[in-house]
Length: 218
Ligand SMILES: [Ca+2]
Ligand SMILES: [Ca+2]
Ligand SMILES: [Ca+2]
Ligand SMILES: [Ca+2]
Image (tube, rainbow, N blue to C red; front, side, top):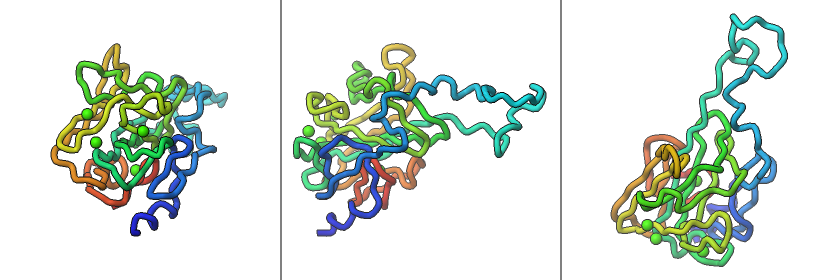
């Protein structure tokens, strides 16, 4: 099977224990502060970078970094999704379910505490990420869209309709409700993912090389 060749290359999947991709176990990301970590407390202080104690005057701002440039802020996007999956990826319950992936295309980490996913504009907080989770720059995470939140923290209470659906990624869903990203589709084929390629970019591909929690492929 072609599928068996795909997952064993270099994937470091940020996913729940027991998750399989094309027949291989996914590998939990243990050392880069992925969304499973619960102690990222620095997300609010990233903006002010003056906490280091060099004695430069305030006049030359930001000259104490290597490049003199502030990293660009976090930018979360819906990066990949599968709306019809009967053979590609299965979860801890051995179920082939819909899923979607989030990617931080920006330069700074972002707390996911108050970030939600939904397919219902009337209920923006349908799925909220686990308390204390965050996503670093260049990192991925993904959520099963299987209407089975009892199966774990990364299981959302909605599914993706291949005939047509719309998903919003929202910050502060019960407050300012800032839409960070939005995807909408109709007539999505089965056993393929829609994926931004390259990651975080504006262009989408339809691909058999599904990569939940890892770099997108054509
Ligand atoms: Ca579906
Ligand atoms: Ca499931
Ligand atoms: Ca739906
Ligand atoms: Ca991916």
